[in-house]
Length: 153
Image 1 (tube, rainbow, N blue to C red):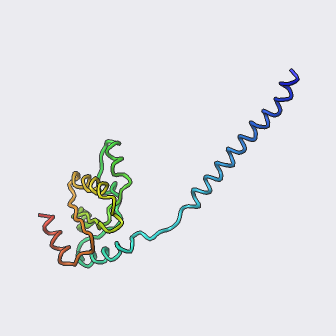
Image 2: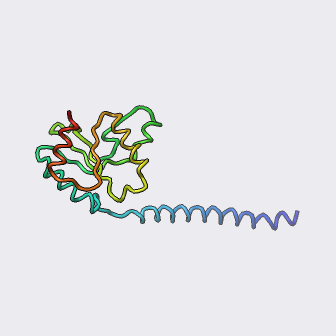
Image 3: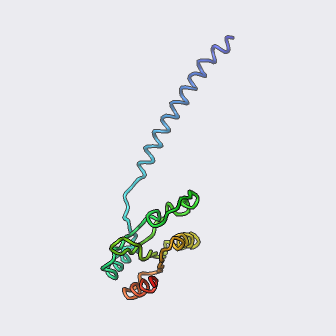
């Protein structure tokens, strides 16, 4: 009996210490998570010239950059939504009614090694009925205009 009464305060101390450690760890984790959030430039150095080229090539269209797939495609099935819900299209060309004319992907060096993932991304856009134009480098204005006209036929 004497052993139990002498161990009981020790167990109580360990229990309180464990709770305190858990609370402190949770607070530190929350601070760490928010401390990691930093601002970034929305377009990479390779995407910036492409944006300006698209604006120049399509002055009567709306050029959007970094568009979430969830703004372009939808489904009622959660499993299908999980295939695209965190993906982003490089550029989207819309008419003045904001109807998507084409999705433009710049497959620069940042896409190297991600070809299979890119194909799956493109497949979901095509399945939704979007036209997709892909370029490895920034094309000239005439190429962009010609490719858009051909894709809309």
